[in-house]
Structure formats: structure tokens, C-alpha cells
Length: 134
Ligand code: ZN
Image (tube, rainbow, N blue to C red; front, side, top):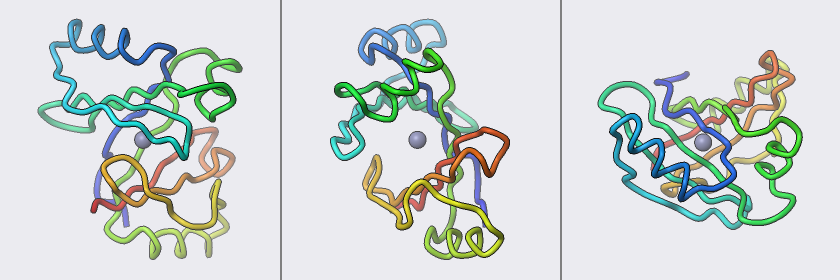
């Protein structure tokens, strides 16, 4: 069902500053910045040569999921993302084994991929994003 670990999402307060810092320290390139108004976040993508990408996410305003996360726990690892072949199929399978999602149907995420979030209570406190690449 899971193809690979696609990215690690890191909640940051200041996207510009953090993206520049990560790019400089780890000699990465920010290949894309994207605004996801539905979720109230902006994201910057820094691919690695191998393995999952880094996704820095910052809140667009008050009271987005990322804003609440940072106020409660501070900046840090927010979620991990698994790429799946077929997100609806994966969701159905997982729902049958009792796994719950933050929303019942997948929504359009970064890069026009379909995404859904598994509630952290199902996975030892880890917020897991599922993603079906467009
Ligand atoms: Zn993500």
C-alpha cells in the first residue's frame, strides 16, 4: 500500500528565514514554494538527492493547524508523508482496520496531489499524511 516515505513536514514560524537557513546549512535548494489557502499554510520544498524531501510549513495566519501546533509545541517535526498508489483505496483499507482520518475524503494538497491525514491517535502520536501523486 505504501510506496515510500515522500517527505517530512516541519512546522516553522518564518518560512522565508527557515528555508534560507535550511538551504544554507545543509546545502539544499528550495525548488518550490506553495501557498495552500484551504489549509492556511505556506510550504517550501527542499529535495534531497536520496530519500524523503523536506517540507517546511508555516502558517498563513492565526488559527491554522500549523499555528495551533507551534503555539502548543513550538517548531519541529509536524508530520511524515507516505506516498500511496491509490489514496482512496488506501483510505478504505485503513478505515476497515479502524484507522481514523482528520477528514473523510482526500483533498488537493501541494503539487496538486491528493492528500489525507491519518489522525495521530492511530499511530503513536505521529501525524501521517497520505499522498497520491498527480
Ligand atoms: Zn506534507
